Amino acid sequence: MAGFKKFLMQGNLVQIAVAFIIGGAFATVVTAFTTVIMDLIGKVGGSANFSSYQPGGVHVGGFITALVAFIILAAVVYFGVVKPYEAFHERYMKEEEAAATEVDVLTEILGELRQGRGQGQV
Image (cartoon, rainbow, N blue to C red):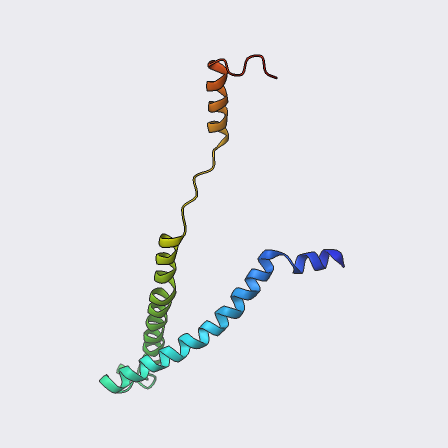
């Protein structure tokens, strides 16, 4: 039972759960925004629902509607999430210095040994 509790309380599992919940809530907002944009497109250019569009008897209307909704959704995610995150990250997050590799550490030790700093100390 203790192992199961530890599994449930792992940081990654909790973070994934929070991300899933926030993602679901964000999807609702984006869907509502997409509906608004589709309605505006409908007011400007006629019907924004292309479901009944069948050139030559081929049902492509549903695909066109889904494609327009996808482009709107991608734009909302890119300009509403990705770009602000990148700007925040550039402005407030300092890039951490690269951690020294084994080769760097060994080269430094070798240099000190060659200079005689390591003699007499064990």
